[in-house]
Image (tube, rainbow, N blue to C red; front, side):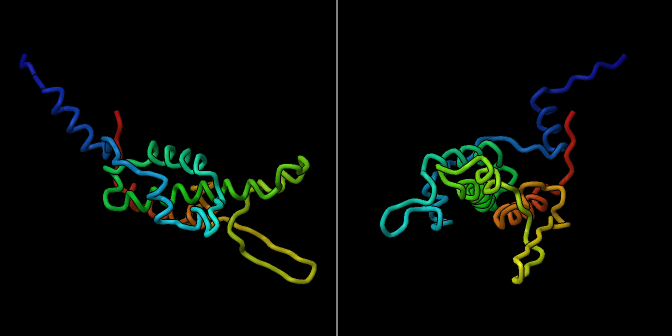
Length: 164
């Protein structure tokens, strides 16, 4: 019987390459990097912020844990910015009710809406629909940033993946 010997490091490298699995540490990404890309989320002329910096930091941490620079390559900063902007926008939407709101107002302000597909003026009417091309992307359809992120992520993650 012939004995087969395989170096564990080589086997792991081949498995990663064949499986299209990327790893490694991400470069640093700070709240200031995000604000430079999306100044609308930063302080205004008088210094007030639409979102507390601590909340933005939470989303920076989430994006860093979710997006691998090794997969996104040069598009990584764009993906990070879109990811964070999406969650910041959802956060702002959830604040529409205010601190003294009733339970109904809080629920109403946090209702998930898809992209607006029609609008009326008489007797006010609006309807929302999901983008068909991104129908499986759920909540990413709820903001323009999420839609852009999902579109990029579909292209970036288009390769085959095999994990065993």
